[in-house]
Length: 268
Image (cartoon, rainbow, N blue to C red; front, side, top):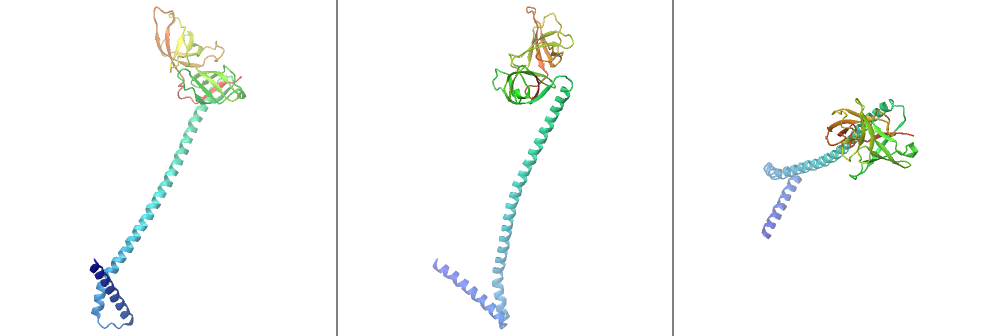
């Protein structure tokens, strides 16, 4: 180990001495023998070439590192900008959809003489036993208990609780809901009852009355809650049992209660 280190040390010292001698003699132009200069150049050239390559390689690695860091930063910035752009796009689409819904409200309210106010649904009853929603309008906005709520597709329900700035609406799909109604063409009367499901029942229709699937059911106005002639739904299924006085009629509501976000409520 010691002899190897000594050999390396002597080799390096000899290399430095020869290099120093060549540089000194070259600067004085007193090197008489061109052969020595050639030998020295032959010995030192590989070393200087290796050093130069190492320097270039280090610079390339350093530049590549900085380019990679810059690329990562630019990628993060671009992802952030893309996220902001998507957020703006989603907001724009939501505003467009809301604008379409409100236009339907405007067209609907212009066709009826009464005064309605638009309200936003802010909560839904999570219990399977009740079909109610909460809206962001109340007494200060002119709403009263039993006020009817609807959308352009048909009736939604009626107000059952009112506070200063909020109200609770009982949907027609709730089992405690009852709406006096009639079949639009035949004028056969009945009561639309909720059953806590997507569909409602059209009850108290006599077995002798002719009711067909697909017929439209509207409000009769006799319950003094809903104005006459508002859409409720269509007859989905009719069952007649000879042992029963009334027919069993299932209704598909015209309103998709899972998708409504705003309602119109009749003001006092």
